[in-house]
Image (cartoon, rainbow, N blue to C red; front, side):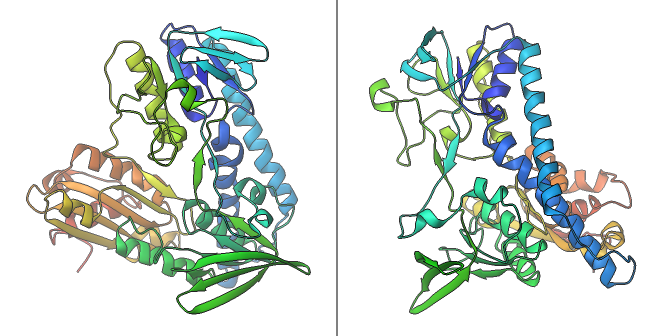
Length: 450
């Protein structure tokens, strides 16, 4: 039995069914979960069109195009909905052809191996919990006035003004997209900097480039309340001894996500949760209950669809008797801002805590032929271990970062050495050349950098 039809749930179901197991999957909403319906896919659809709009405007300003960069937001939203529908139907088709029984409804786990749904009871030897997560909020007066990411994705027209509470992945992505549609955006982040767990140079560059696009970013600032005002809202915040009042038409609450345990009474089941309420699992995705597994957002850790896929495959492998652990050493993490941010592996500081002597190599987009041809800007950062000369981390800020990070993931996962980078031939012209150049720069051997 699998509870939840998001990336972790449906991929687990297909893998299990293809391995000969009899599988039932419960989904109370739409197949594909948050990712396909109100997360990854619709967000990226909007961001892609926003990026095309920005590029058109840039070329128009240079006199290369005569387009004005106008847009029809209603048609864009319709296109987004069509793309989502196509993917959701595709998942349903895959499940059906794989022989998975899909039950529409919320399952209640009444014991570790028994579930009730729509008046029927089901029993199985193994259970995978993949119920995902839900948007979190902060306990401030007026928080109910704010929209979550689902609400912002469904706006009929871009607002004139938007305040984003939270400078994490969702907040920055939505800020980037709506800025391209002409919205005045202010991001309020409680922490002292954006992306504090990433390479400082990369995080600072991203913040600088977002500000250059006209996005206001206020870090180290705590929201105190949201008030209803004539024609809109006011977000009141404070930084040290300074107070701010931002007038806005829309408030986006993007302060993270919380586990969705609907249908699961952890206390009654005797299931262990971590201090934040996520289900505790080991690297085999096993809970403390025999033959009960948890994958994806509900199990905490990286709240990423591709991690949910990997965890689902791990759970199914162990159910089949093939011991397997989820390897999180090289997990790519992307923020689809404009420009894009992507990273994998360790930062310099994290490498130090592992006893390494990290060296940082960099390569700017301005030195790359393809970047110049595409009017792209940014920087690639590669962290190498001085002793072993192995690649331990990569961070990229710039166009194509979310695609380049796949090459970087292979480099980190395989611990590619300086000599292996030197022997690697990469197509020219391509943005991928910059990853190799940055790695070689860590030891002063980049060809196209002084």
